[in-house]
Length: 97
Image (cartoon, rainbow, N blue to C red; front, top):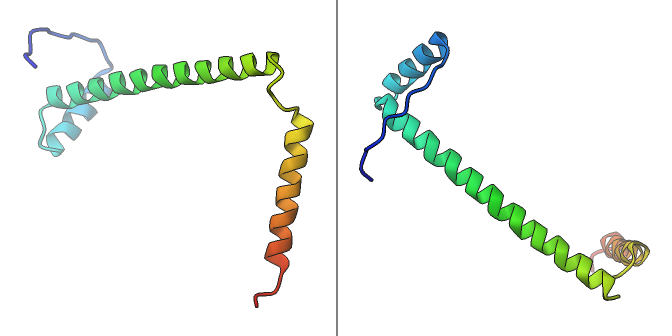
């Protein structure tokens, strides 16, 4: 990727000095560290947007199925989970043969 743009920002002197010292201690140019941080930020934001869209789609699909009468009530789900927990507990309580 060619470097054709300049990015100027204002920040506290103490932060700049600490950042420059850490970049130097890591034997890396400050500009390289900033580019890496920017790329990571962009990637995290993209992933968050994709996950939000995935979740929105999943919720919409669930709502549609509920409206169509294909869902289960919370009481049914809780009763099934309770039965599974009880069965697992019984198995855990059985002596090993």
